[in-house]
Amino acid sequence: MAGTMTIKLVFSGGLELLFGNERNQSVLIPPFVPSDNSTHSSPDTPSTGETKAADLEYLIYHLRDHVLKERPELFMENGTIRPGILVLINNTDWELEGEGSYQLCNNDEIVFISTLHGG
Amino acid sequence: MQTVKRNQQQYDMPLKILSYDELYGWTMDAIVEQIGKKNNCTFCGVFRRQALDRGAASLKVDHIVTGHNADDIAETVLMNIMRGDIARLGRCTSICTHGEDTIKRSKPFKYAYEKEIVMYAYFKKLDYFSTECIYSPDAYRGHARTFLKDLEAARPSAIIDIIHSGEAFEVKEEIKAAQKAQQTCKRCGYMSSNDLCKACTLLEGLERGMASSVITDRARKKMDAIGPAPDNIRTIPLFRSTPTIAVELPSQS
Image 1 (cartoon, one colour):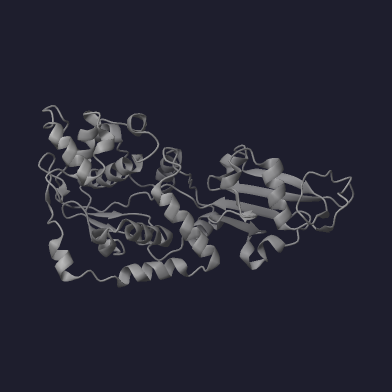
Image 2 (image 1 turned 180 degrees about the horizontal axis):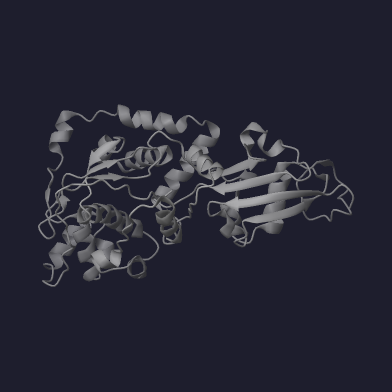
């Protein structure tokens, strides 16, 4: 579909273990996505509900539903990234970019780093 | 472990790997087999702390430097409050404390947020690895940690605020006086507040197949009532040393 965006992903700090041990991956995201972050409608036949420009929040749901291999509770919590996981958007802390409301652009690089470790 | 071995090459530093099996005659796998997934942190924590001291002494190290960051210290403050551990609460925020013998222990990253350290490591492309403990996914520290991370998400200064509160704690002199005096373990000679140090007590429990009963003082008395320790209990090697050099230990995070 025209306008589909390629999003580069990096998982590190141990988080790659939840994503099939692949540190570098990429996903295709349509420019408009369901407002309720439902990821199960095909990009070619968008759900009839409301849509929004694809944002980071949607990407998180997409990763959980389609890329994550195990233990989703270690990745997401209460509709966002679990506290303790750092997110960088093109090498900038996502807290400076509006977190989940950041609008994705083609070729964005999103990095997820787990800071969790043993005691 | 592979990361640590690579780090040794990258930083050209001496590395000593000391296994629980070598020191205590038990691997963590064997301990978990007997104890189960709960409470094994007690064993790992005590054994790890003592292994650091014993290993440092064997290398004639006079100063142990650990990689504890601000998040770790704040977690410890919370845990000591929740457990009512006054003795530890009083000293857990000190940057420099004394371990076994005259070996000093320091936490130079005490005020550095874990987030800053991880970001630094990422941007400097440092080779490191971190993962959650496979033996105890549901440890007590995990609850303190989750709580702390939730607090941080709501208000980032919470971490440094908790450390500040920990530092400001004053333990009354009468309470301090009532605390058990430090002595040395009758079996291995390690510093201890009881006749036997924590590692020797835990080890005896493991050897006698009563490991789950040595975690609290009360349960310990019950084990003593059943009978005295058999003669063949291992004496954990203790290395006495005259300090000469300082070696930085690789941090966990």
